[in-house]
Length: 278
Image (cartoon, rainbow, N blue to C red; front, side, top):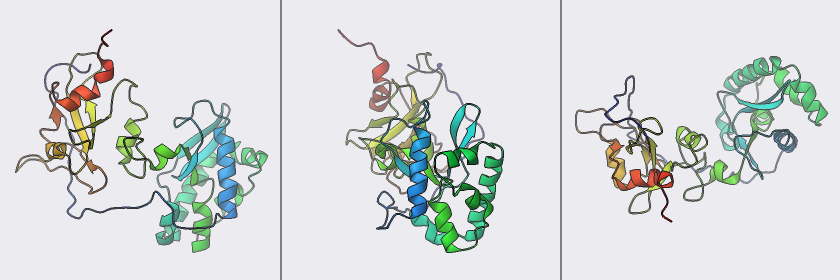
């Protein structure tokens, strides 16, 4: 189990609070007809990810997440990078063309640094790349073209990672991205998502390095109805915790968010690191 004994203070952290909880529904897109641009970019995305042997979100089959991914080619092959902003299909209708054009300019700079990229697209039958990069975005139609292009709708994710919910999977459409990301770089024998006595999900992480013998964990996020959500709210006068009102109440930093080794959730987190009885 993890971490060195003793409390390790944190510096430079802060917490936030939202007074107006909200709910989103993005897992199922509104009824739509796939555009030619979308069909072409999806086909290219699948061809490109098939060339890789180290895709973080493998294995297939993949859905395509409108996550602002940009596929580039260097001397070692194809690589997916991420732009600062990804435009969900349903979000394009409130997208300011001038702001989307700033994303286009960013993508153009990235692609310029990888000169084999556009010719590589053409080799796979995708010929719209150069025109998209060189066309200023000024209209709703151009926003739509960009949204469905290889420069935005191009992040291949299995269905669970895309829009799944626990206990089956943690999808980006239902859980805070920083929490979901942890699930893809954690040790395989550490349980990020654990459950309280009511079966509600809580996300926890170790408080210190692996192998130190410290079994404490820090609560990062908890279902709003879980008793563990209270661990994210410090006493009066302390720092406030952040809550989104989302499927998960997102924690940031709060006194009391560290659970003792004998807490049921801490034991769940390290369960697979315990010696198994014969």
